[in-house]
Image (cartoon, rainbow, N blue to C red; front, side, top):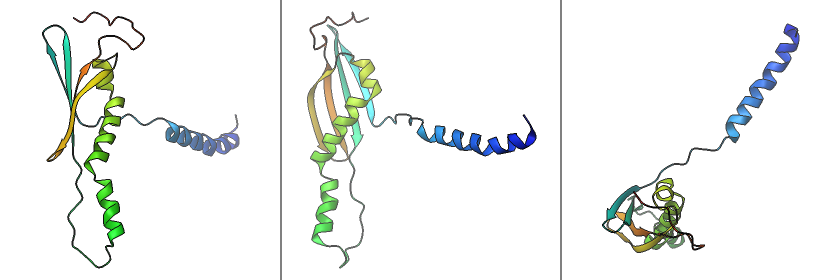
Length: 135
């Protein structure tokens, strides 16, 4: 190839590399703390903890309307955050590895500064297959 031809292709190559970098999937961010516990008899338990989001303190102004305050409080509603935490847990690769056949939620709550979901792994897949032997 001639140098002139290479100069024409260089911007195209740069553009293609930028586009491919933008289209690559983002690495999955792990959210929360995941702890496990194995009990006698092969019982596998886990606990998933996430900090409870709270609105930042700010001065009361005349600009704040009741509608704005309601929208802010809805965003920080503990029940809504608990539902979001359940979605995070279902996608968490640590849970998928620890409980390959799924799980049963034993308890879930939002208290003080954290949301906690405790559960137990399923031992059979939903289709009725036997779980692989536990070591």
